[in-house]
Image (cartoon, rainbow, N blue to C red; front, side):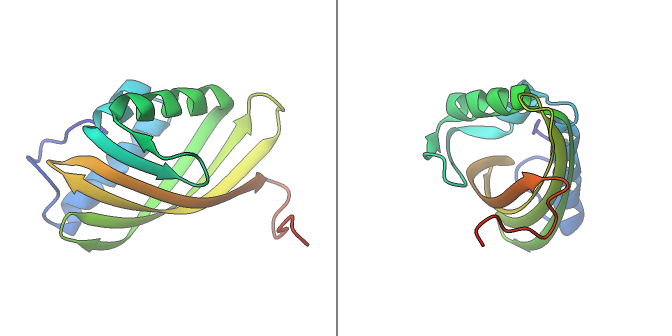
Amino acid sequence: MNTMEIEGNPRTLQEAEALVRQVEQLCMPWDVEGMAAGFTEDCVARFGLLPEMRGREAVREFFHKRSERQKNYRLKKNIRAMAGSTLAIDWNATWEDSQTGEMMQGHGVEIWQLRGGKLAVWEAAFNIGAKDAEGQLGII
């Protein structure tokens, strides 16, 4: 998430939309350095059930590990709400698991709290599964 031409946080829905499109592009293919640059040095990231990450270096390492595991990652994000410096986003993604070769899919929601045009707090909840397992919860 490189800093946009816009100084600071998006002020309009159009500016927020441009930021989200930029993030999508950084994921396809994985631009780990560009993504990490979009976080504040003191960021906090909560991604599913993973331990909380603190700081840009922790986020960089997280994206690096994901990029090694998720081949041909395809992502679509949608803004659901914007309030001041906070964005609510949902996403859908597909990829090939580099360890199993299985096609995967995911869906999730994110809350972004921005400071100075960068992510200061990133919270994500999601579901993932095999692409051909549509409609299966795996818990029944």
